[in-house]
Length: 266
Image (cartoon, rainbow, N blue to C red):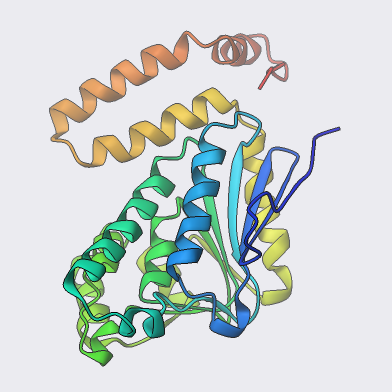
């Protein structure tokens, strides 16, 4: 039986459950709308680094407790120390967290049950996949306070079209879950009562695939996006060649030839 890991991070602001190849991280500050305080970012960073080194984890689900998914940075915390060096360190910490998330070898699924604003919207955009309840809403609303959401813009513009992203950034307006799906910010939208089942369906589909193929594919997916087309094809070809040499891949191809289910080890 797979081990169940319950909250290895001492701080209860982040709940952790690990079983059956799935690590579920739950932001657990519902009264504060699950803001990304420095402490919350530290807790997430530690968990992402642990998960990256754990081959038993095949999929990560990022969830949140309460009505909001994440309302962005902790504005009270930010206002308490108005110093340039502090703000530079804070946003560097956030950027490191976001890039660590994307660099994980495991796919990360955002389970969005409510509002995701500013850095919370950024968090959704940095996840590889996202499933939202139909009541969820999304915004990059810092501009309403006089603060352009510059770091969220990096993630947002890599998910939705330029004009759609810029409109969100300069108006601070919310979009609903269906609009988020149409624009490419989330993959699936379902009624709130079906959210867990829909996330589970996506998880099970990924778990049914060999881990080596998923990890290689995720790494290639993001690297090639930043390349010119010739370099991208070169990297993709090398990735596929190495992937073909994996025992599970050879078994999958042989099973297809023999018209039988594959007997994968991972």
